[in-house]
Length: 519
Image (cartoon, rainbow, N blue to C red; front, side):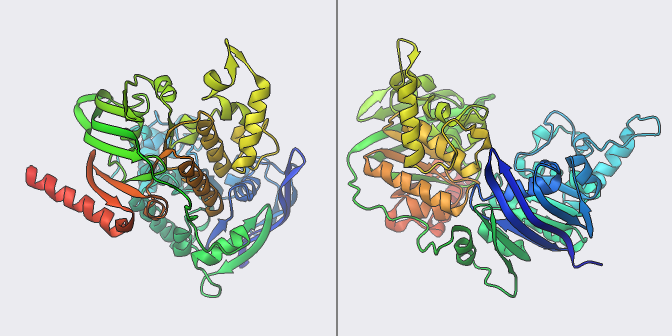
């Protein structure tokens, strides 16, 4: 039996004359977990799309040798028939169909006459769920009623039902919390024991170091190196050096020359109830303030209420029965909708850039200027296209958006560059207050560093910046002050010198004990 289950030789793939992959080589050993690392836009997902038939044979140059056979996949169905299954970052589940229906979607369990055998479908779906640690789940409930972590595992169960030999996972933990991520990584190690080979694309380097046997680094469409566990240095710093081509000695740029000014944003006695349940209070008597030039973090566990707080502030985008006061530059403002929030110079970068931040089928220019259109790029209802072009070109250069031109479709950009376009969109509204919700989710260390530089520039310009992040090192590395949120309440406030993972968790635990005493 061949040592390698997969060899991709001299793969070259171009889009509109621009090479996304240039003579890339990849070898994956049978039964290993092989990680693909690289900055956003390096070509990782493109390479896996070539392998799985998303980009069919003939649209690229080079050979795919799988199980000693040269394969020419023209579609995903052809690659799946050989046991190659890809799970994309955007899950391919139908929320209104049951778990069982989703597990066998496109792979229906039918009788000789083509009629679906529902008894067999449910039985086999349960067997597949047991393999991924979801044996207790009801296979008849709609997939949309389950959390993202369970949906990710259902995608793996769906792959198992297709008799997978080589499983490709593209950013599988990007939208998961720490506990869900650990569960998924343990499932991968279990699949490895079952003889299934895995390729994982991830920006979470600590997870890659933990789970991978080999790491191939891709930079700017070229294969740079392959590192092997037990033989090569597997540290995060070593992986980063391969990804960005240099040592990244400080992942968080030092903020210099910033003068903290007067309070320019304040929330008093803020209360919010769940949009679907008027009796369920999500945010309880929250009081926060941010000074000019200050970067303030909102820390807490998943579900603590951070995003709910941010969205309720930003034009009452979340919740009902909202009460409390908002002050901007010392003056109370009354905000009924998103338009009012923008006019009061408040901006919000959503954690879900694809659903709430961008119009993926539109170009970079229009995505950057849409929020500022009414105030800065039109007069009497007529759009000034020249001003739009000038502003979009300026910000493309200013925050280093990697694209052919401002006319490129945003949906064709990598995750990090999409995030930069969302940032530019809100920076162009010239806000005084900028709320950034998971600003670096799903993007690489190089792009993260550039976004941290943008945050520093905003602080230098005297803006009030609020950062929500599930990555505690990010909160510690970027914030001047932190509010710890737990169960919709402020559990504690930490100043710069006191911010640490231990102090944040201590605040949460102390708040939980207080709640227990009050019950």
